[in-house]
Length: 629
Image (cartoon, rainbow, N blue to C red; front, top):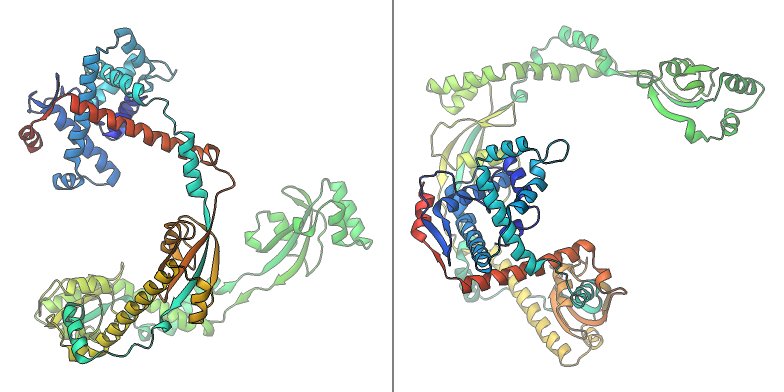
């Protein structure tokens, strides 16, 4: 409803018509002139104002379009109902109807000249010169299937509604008192003294008697039940599974090395400095100075630069953008300075400060790697042939093991695994290929069924079959006694610690100090300063900070430590107001949001008042009929 009221104000029509060209119609301002076969029987009446079933269905369909665009998929009728689209549209149309009825009662209207003026101001109808263009007007309306007279009627309706909305909510601002309260609330920080109460305060907790453990187990039996397990046999087919390095000859390896020798060669690189001089004369003078004993560093300094300014990095020859500089640099010895080079940006002096020679890997060094790569390449080439041969063998009556044996593929059997990938000892099987997809498929089939292969990435397959099913069952206590006992001890420890904290918290509220309690427990009292509302403190966590801010100054409380290994007993000892408070301490966008919220509240109240003033009737049968088409 509020969205609809907002869309009835300001530049609503311009936004609506532009949106229609890209996405769909908006909810409001629909005349219902489209023939849907629903007729014009009133679906909503508010006093003397009515909304037809046609208008409801058009608004409903257009809201579906808007949501579908936002979600990136077309909503079904069932999904729309789950989102509450039918009720949303009904609420919006009822709100519009009571506003229209109020306008009718007040005798509000709009002259033809004013409608024409509003239409001319609408950016949707402007031409390239920024002025109203009749052809653009006709084109926009034709695109949304609206007649000019319908547009004028709806534009007048929107403008009249706007008069009511602006009379109620225009110019609303959040009061300074409210903004000051918000700034005080948000900017406040606190100091808390606290004790971290470890489990050791109540430990050790002895194992319970059998009767106690049995009763505790009976209440949680499902928690310890055994899931369904399946025995799965599978064959993995990836290039590495069929790669045959023995089939690659020494001649093939040598030929590949010679063909791709650059791949095994690391080019020579040099660390190069380049000093660009303002003129050829200046460059020649610099060379003369070098010959007379001046250092390159002094030449650089004389040009008002540093060595960092002239260093261009460690590069291979073919990576240097200036070919002239590259030729000069790679002709120099270590720490040698060139003569004048005609560079892209003017005369240049080049110095090389380090040389990293070319490195070539010998054939013998890389031959195993080449052989493996060639075998994998061949395996990629024949992978689909092997896949088809396996499928043909199964179609011919071979078992999974027989088909795998013919193709020299390995069969792996998992004796028992649940749907999460755990074995019966609760350990996770980490080496299942395409584990999520394989387990999903294995738990969707039956024993002995030949199943479609599961894909491994873009170039692999897993053939599988289920060879046995162990049904889910309730485990007896004796089978899981060790785990149940450990869980009982952990739960009992937490309970006793919580009871201890409750006792200490009561003492704190009754006047005992944290210092006294700390002394009794031989714990260190700690202080946390500068806590901010909503912060996620490392020691307190977000929930702990919220607990500190939930009490008044001097108040106390307790919460679980974020690490889960202790409980924290605290007292809020200091509360500090922010240095700046009031409207100026609130960001402009936040002030606008508060003002918008207040406006929305007023509009809510207006619509609620009007709905009580004008009898609103909704024909539910007509809604069902409108949605049935």
